Length: 148
Image (cartoon, rainbow, N blue to C red; front, side, top):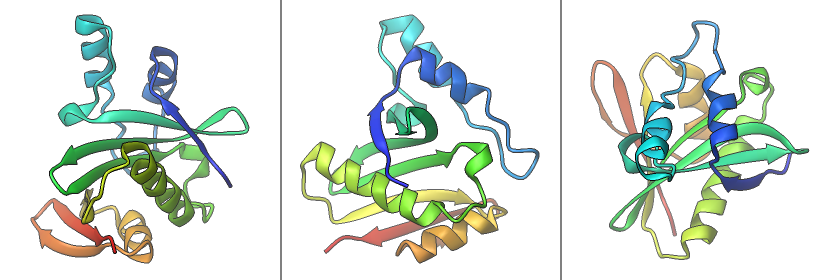
């Protein structure tokens, strides 16, 4: 599947806010997008990230968020619930990272993410996409993918 990444809009944020993962994963935290839009008319996601929607055949297939911190690109991401478990995730992760690298047109040494320790399927996906575990707490795992 090939994705077209477009900036977050109010319509997209509302649709994503309705996603539910049937108890397997936490639902997405979309409130910061709505709060920033109400306050300033711009969309800023959790932690100040910049959000993009991944479209496939003009339908929302996922969400990809980027936060730039020095030489690192931090990401957050989600697939639309009906697409979870269909074998799309590794390609989705790689396409989203490549979009971010092209979009920001900056040299990054690494890509970082955090994942809930209980989200074993996502951890496997990230490891297949080249991420390594660098720190673990009782709740989260921090992972890094070095860029060459």
